[in-house]
Structure formats: structure tokens, C-alpha cells
Image (cartoon, rainbow, N blue to C red):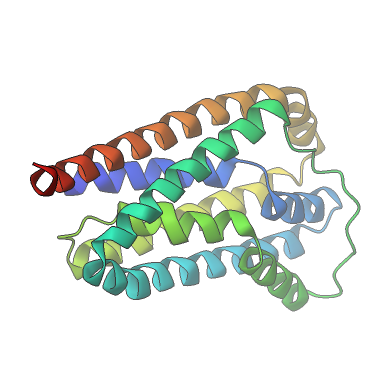
Length: 216
């Protein structure tokens, strides 16, 4: 059960990571503009905020969920609905590419700060860590499991965003991505939709099982 939840969390986080969003645009644009060092700094900023999101999730919300299991299940439903909504948006209206004009940053420190703040204000990680991630932590999980989960999502974010910063420094990579963007968005939509529907179904089943004795 613990390992299953751990692997599910890892898979969901990777799907959310690779789905293009504002973090993707920020790092990609800096990289394709020939600012590899600033793109790397922005990637570090985004990943640092991911670490903070994960810590806040397991430290704050774990206590609340232990005292209020109903809230946990409500957020599970919200998390499943969010995944289905994101899947629908990807399927019907793929996000634009990474060619939006963005201001040039004056230093690597500023790039790090931009990445950190962008991820802090980004609704995608806020919803993921506030609902999907927090509710994926098993009720019986100990501190070792939670530390491993936090380390996992931080490592995922760091690897992915650093790869973006380095890969998008090459124009050929950006051209290939642009040609396959619609297909990749559809694939991500299917994966998110399946996970979202499964989360909703499992939560509804758990609610029915918990309410059955009182309704009998």
C-alpha cells in the first residue's frame, strides 16, 4: 500500500511537471534566448519553491487531515476534479508554445527569484500540493515516508527543470517539441484524466463504506 501510493505520487507529479505551464515558459524562453546560466538559475528557483510546497503540504495538511478525515476526502474529490479539468483543458485547448515575449533578467539572482516567485504564484503546483499530493499521503505514513516523498518531488522538479534549461538551449530541440506539442498534450490529457477519475471513484467508494453503517 505504501509503495503503491509512493509510485502513484511520483507518476502524478511527473505528469504535472511535463505539462507545459508558466514554469515551462519561463525556463524555456530564457534558454532559447541564449541565456543558459539564467535558465539554470530559474530552474533552481522553481525547484526550491517545489520543495517548499511539498514541506508545507506534509507538515501542515497532514495534521489537519488526521483531525478531520472528512476534509481529506473532500480534497481528494477536489484533486480528482482538478486532474480531470486539466485533462479536459489539455485535450480541447492545448497551451501555447514557449515563444511568448518575456523580459530579460539582469542577473542570475534575479532569474532565481523569478523562478521562485513564478512557481509560488502558479495555481498548478498550488492545487497539486494542496489536494493531490497531500491526500496521496497514506494515513499511516510515518516521518520516513513523508521525508522520502518530499525528497522525491524535489528531485523530480530539479531534474526536469534543469533538463529544460539545458535542452532548450538547442534550437533543434525546441523545433521538434513544437511539431509534437499537440500529440504530447493529448497523451498527458489521457493520463491525467485516468488518474483523476480513479481518485474520484476510490474516494466515493471509501465514503460509501464509511457511511454504510450509519445508514443501515
